[in-house]
Length: 218
Image (cartoon, rainbow, N blue to C red; front, side, top):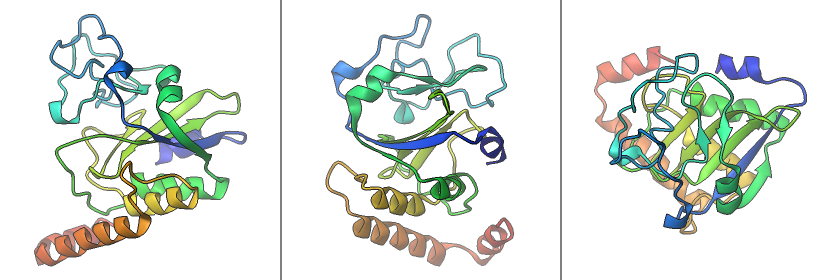
């Protein structure tokens, strides 16, 4: 998370949002020249080649099961992070400012953790974390789907979908801030039991070699 540490300066602040599920009315028009069969965002999250890479000349390939046409964040190349303010206002259910001492642990839980994520074949993020500068411009963003155990970072910091991250730590922070964890009344206790159960199952089924390699990566 060094790039985010370097970007964060005195006066910057972080806000976490809980979002309602998108509806057809929230869908944005397709970008000219985009794949007519994708989610309608021309791969807004598909710049998986680093924030400094030039924008692709052709529409990028996007995994259909992980592509949504209701993007609030879009960063497809060099330049500022773009936020669809209308979509954010429309879909926002609740927001909370992240206290200064909680910012570093939040970022570390997602970008530094070696906890393996059990990725599902879906992606319906209902949580958004925006990193603002002192003037209110967005410098970076985190989009999180607890139910799918997936998240995305803008600007991208690595290629592909992240395979590791401690979403349980993030869920505990959001619960502390009063943000719901899911649209079906998901409680922190239930989520803790679910995640800890998955971790125990993964650990019991892992080979000794895999556990040794994972431990060495910490």
